[in-house]
Length: 437
Image (tube, rainbow, N blue to C red):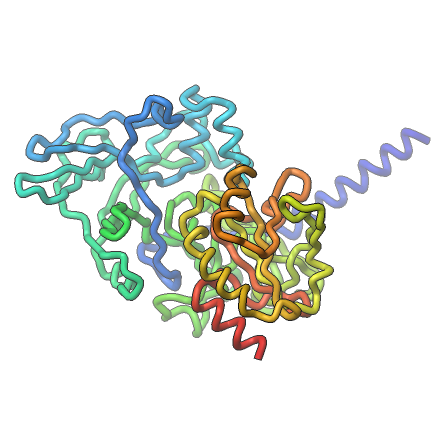
């Protein structure tokens, strides 16, 4: 009987595996320079910090040919694939196991060894910032990635004030720099090229960059645009998708809620597929066909039901579940105590929460990757009165919602359907006032 039971379980397992594999489609990718239908998104780049306790210090790149005509030189690098960098630095002993595992937890990241190389590759672009004789900031980027800056031009980074009313879309008209980097392709290390845009934001005293390059795939007669990590890298580790049709093909930018993130669903010619992401090593996009209708599926995108969860309110014995909040509009705010934009939003949320009808609207803060003592201090100092739930190893709320960055927000209607994403500030208040009227 035990043998029969084992054979039966094994048979069911392999049938399920076979069924899943049959429903997965792999679509070849074609690289395109530019932003396409995606809005521009920048990520910060910083010169290296000279701190003996910095866990990254052993990973700093060493370059030659530093420009003799510049002073106050500060070296750094631009990541093309942060996951590859961390994986190879840990494999070569430059990062401790404790720090490596803390990064996995913080990023909600499980290393995909099929897409990563243990052999170190040149996935970082070195640069140096300095001052010329007039005291003006200049920059040199190692465009051919040979760790020698003597053959690279000196240039002045494009400067923006960073004011709210400044038109960031103008950045798409600035000519980017073309850089070389290495990546894994068919299990071989190859050299590739990509455009990189670098700016200096005066208001925040910060240098920022993005890689204006995306990819396209085709399923039957439908073309799909694929963006890598909102242009913060060119690894396609978290691929966002847009169906290219008459409403999106010629647009400079579509709204963020139209972008299908990893583990979200995309509808093509009436068929729903799950975005399984990109296998960069094979240069393919993976979609998984589902036979369920939209009202049967749970997701983090507009028009779908959110994932159910239950958690204990911070510093109380009260339990909160999403199911019991049906009948109200619910604003889920995924944040962390160290997140600057999250902290800046607290006064706005506080003002909204004080004047809204709480029988019709509720805010739930989902706090991740944050020490409890710092959370308690922030709740007290800012007089935060809406419920805060810590996403931990027990409730795994952050993991359920595939949150990889803060702030991330969702607005859910009284029927339990997501109606908006990433609303903040005046945009959130206007939306709530509109809905409650």
